Image 1: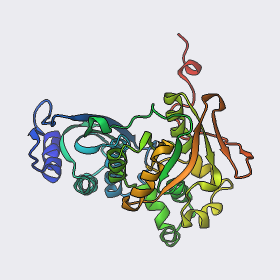
Image 2: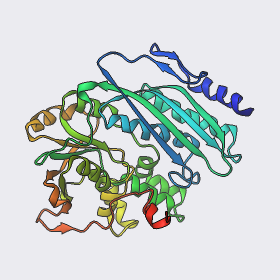
Image 3: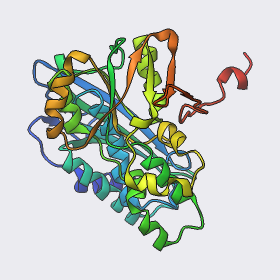
Image 4: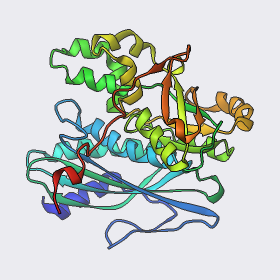
Length: 340
């Protein structure tokens, strides 16, 4: 088929006309029209086989869905909506054309549901593993964009959805004793890992009503991503364990797979829920719009002085010792590895 034949095949399955695409796939760069008064949001993310996904545990279709969904989640965390995307693939010889077709179908279904359109990309040979890179272009009204650096002391901390389901789903998948029947029992947890839902409409509504002072999506774990907000806003935070939103399935099955389910909910990662801070004066407005949101929103903590750092507390005030923050691509620093 060759590279250009493959590009045409992907283009035929994904590319749809859109009034704001001036020039799409086939040139050196895409050209899109952005309306006045709006900000362009751009983000890119890479998924690598053996690091971010394992082809033993996921279908090509689900991998396609997740690849685009996790990128769209970054746009949602800024209060924006996705408009266009570019995809680059490093394809090893072990993958068939049928695999790429399935993968592409997964991407298409997410792009269709989120109303975003492909405008270009690249393909390359990879010797042994599958590489996926997606760049998303989104937009938001300039005054609505929510960043990580504007949280203030006494702001309240909220999160959408549940925490820990994805991490538990991955743990179940990695347990080699799982049979197909057992996996069906844990289907809800496994699907949260394989097919996360980007909270686009929730982020947009939060932004439109100017409710959040800071916001981020939870990709590396609640504590790790909360630390990003705290570091950039120069504040600390306290989280209340009893308030953490845990699904019925998580509460029922987590102890079968881990001795520390709380750590899994705090640090497991890949929840792709929205974590945001709210000025106390906007609390009533948040409660007013909660019924409109597609998922539940839970009050889990409060922003404090920077000197207090991030603490996790029981209701009686006892500190819960967090053993790790979350996922880190580079736990060993370059200084530890290389001498200059």
